Each structure stands twice: as structure tokens, then as C-alpha cells.
Image (cartoon, rainbow, N blue to C red):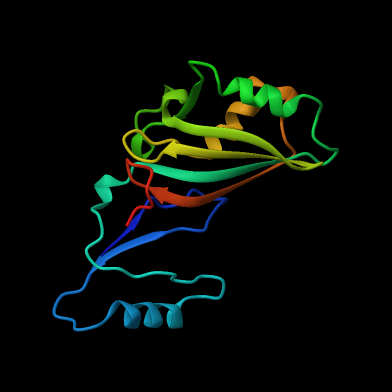
Length: 178
């Protein structure tokens, strides 16, 4: 079989949507049977929710929807949500990242053009949630860079803990990638 996992996750990022692209040749098996066989073989906590034929090519992946929880042990600091919203309304927000495949040292990039949508909401007295739609290919933005921008540019609002979760993978029309 030819197998490809789209957009492998960074360490510490959880996901509710992973794509496994594969081809089976000379196999007469239904999508339902594939789903059942995969679910019978996976570790606890992992679940195949859908199997479909003739999906889009992986090169058409464009965006991902993610949640980044900023957790403050002593409670959310005053004005944190407003300050973070304003931070991401800038026209430029430069962040450093490793060059492709760890080569070429550190590359500085403006992450603002890679953010399609971003909101900041209070979840409870200890957690701010950033909901974002960001580019995931050509160019790509790691969701963890959003919380790293808060730490870099608004150190007074540095959270005690950060949780990142990929929620959906989308095409250029912001439709679920299939």
C-alpha cells in the first residue's frame, strides 16, 4: 500500500482530525470494512471516524482550525483577552522558526498573513481560548506559534500552561478537507 499521513503533529499538540491517505491495489474491500479493520487494530483512544474514496489530493490542504488554551493558575490577568486580540490585529507580527527540515538555521516570518481568523474568548476564570483558522501548507503556521507570540510580545500575559488542539483540516474554500 501507498500510505501518507497529512500534516504530522508537533509534540504536545493534540488532534481531533488526522488524515491518512492510502491506496490499495487489487483489493475488493468496502470503506466500511476498512474502517472496521482499522478501528479493530488501533490503540485505545484512537478512532477512525470516516473512510472515503477518491479524496482530494493532499496538495489541496490549505487551512486548519485550532484551539489554543492559555491557562493561568492564578486567574486570567486583567485586560489579557483585549490585549491578545489587539496583538493579532497588527499588520506584522514577526516570529522565528527553524528552517525547513531543521536546515538553514532560524527563519523570521510575519505570521499575520497566515492567520485567516482568530478570536479570543474567556472559557472560565483561568482559561482564555484562541480559536483560529491558520495556513497549514505553503506557507504553514504551527498553532503553537500563536501562544509563543503572546509570550514574546505580551510577556505580562504569559500563561502557566498552553494546550493546542487541531480541530479540523480545511481546503481553500474553508470546507472540510475530503
